[in-house]
Length: 600
Image (cartoon, rainbow, N blue to C red; front, top):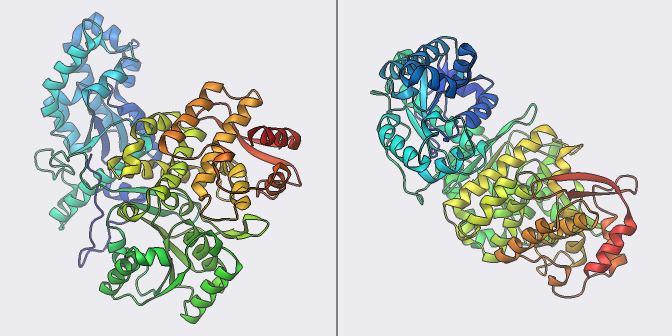
């Protein structure tokens, strides 16, 4: 898979290729359509519908249009009239749809094999080959009974033969994106990035304005000239569409070394105050960012705090705020939070109260902060009475998630961050959990699966934040495992005895077990979740926390201070199964107390 690297700004270019907003892509697209081509089972319809929604375009399925016009199904057309007549009708329908204005068009598997259709697509659209391997295709098409070319004989042999016949022609498409078993939204973003890069390449190749000429697959610069090996460096961009102030999350290796470029594109002339901690300094990340800012001619200062959760309190906040004031950071300047969740929460909160609000760039350097705390605008500090009880919603203006920074972390920290990754599968995406069960070693070990997991997590959170920025509804689902987990963290004194992600892991196991005890969740799902967390090396039981903890009454007192408590009534995120979390209000405290006593 080739996800586009962010282009460097070019001298004299009036429009940079940074954030891939819908408006920018649509502007470059003009009257063209995005035409998805590929084998049966490549995901053209499922990806196409989401792509159209993301860009605000109409989605059209060519096969559905053919069926509507013929008043019969595709298999019936094949049976009554044969493939040759079907292909002629298909050619006419696709040509008509392409002339109807910009849309996202999903074509049948054989449509692109017709030379006249390819020429029409080149005149009126940008073609995207959704490429999938044979095993993936076979697994998907087995679920369908409406594939006339695969209906007779051995589907695997027929599929392999079709793939061999068609692959070279599909490769003539303007861009290629791999369709694999990840959340559809990730493939959608990769399609957008590839189409955008293709259109940008056309603009660069024809700066005098010839870009409105037909995009011929024979002359266009492909966004994927050759297939990249699995371990090749890739990047992703996730858009967080918060009302009135959308921003982008850049994901991939090497972003810290490009901080100066991104800050300049974001706010030319701004000064930057870097807030970080001693561990991040020791890892060399501060030096990397400082060198990048120097190279871009950006004035900057650094405020370094002690590492660890205990820094996220009133004394730590005072240190950062006073440091920002001493550095004369003003409203048009930027605070850059360089570090894990503690630094991000602390710097973000300090920025929110400094001069009644200074913008913040989040540069998370831990897995936990990249997939969770840096996204969504929650900032704050802890109180002795509970975690994150003091804070504000303050959205970042940019997130730079440099996945290479994770290579400097202890394995324990990476595993703790993974708890927040698996949370997204458990709360609303069973397919993601299925994928993580298979791919977790690559996520932990730094394989290509890591970037995919970070992007999938950010997309899941971005979608929820866009619907519910201030946590008045669905956003509370993101707290799956956190009510129990926060109580355990506070009980352990916010110490190295229990990292935040470890507390969340125990909390999620408890949430599933409590849901099962209430008759809400199948016991086999509880077992599956616990086994997965234990396989990764995460704690799942209260007894896994080393040292003394408060007794059951003490834990109940800490739970009563949870942010989700409303007028004394307990609110939990419970589950009906993997991928089926829901908000449970007015949970009976006595049931919680009895459950905790049983779990001790």
